[in-house]
Length: 249
Image (cartoon, rainbow, N blue to C red; front, side, top):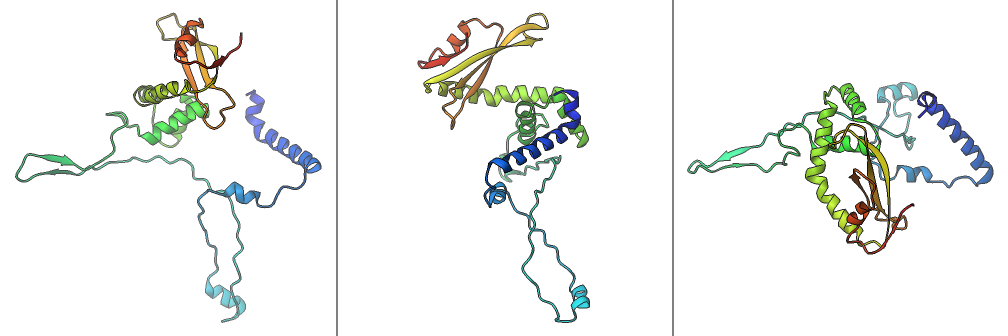
């Protein structure tokens, strides 16, 4: 984003919205009633009541001089920023009085043994990095504002270990599921690698394979890192595929 876009994005977007609304008003009929209800559907509702003390009402209207009408209802989006806390698990331990048997109460396994990372924290890191494109150094700064000192190196190590331990199984499963589709698409793009046994800055390639766009309800998109762009890579990746693979030149 250009430097000017960083500072005036809100004004630019608001101006676009005004222009779009004016254009829509000229070209389209008024929007249907109930759209706001659709926008708010599915969200939990927190009822916040606003009332007046009975003494104050009696002072204004006199004793038994007022009645209550139906409430006026206003709705606003409520948003609670992320909060940080420590989940301290106390696992009850039991031992038999007449035996040496020791048992522990059922409890969730650690995501990574000996690590402070929790599933919710790692999910937040992965979502910020790979869905919202927030670099790890900026996540580190954001965590600092919440009073959490989480170095980016820790986040990187957590993500790599969780990918190897948990997501690799899902990757292999989706890879196999791809073979059941008739049309796939493939392409590659250059990336600079610093740690793959070659001099820093060597050119490598990230290959992407995806199901055709007509499969709107069950898309699969997989990436594969390779040092080159030779044709043997897609041949190997799609060795059990018998459909059509669409690529560029």
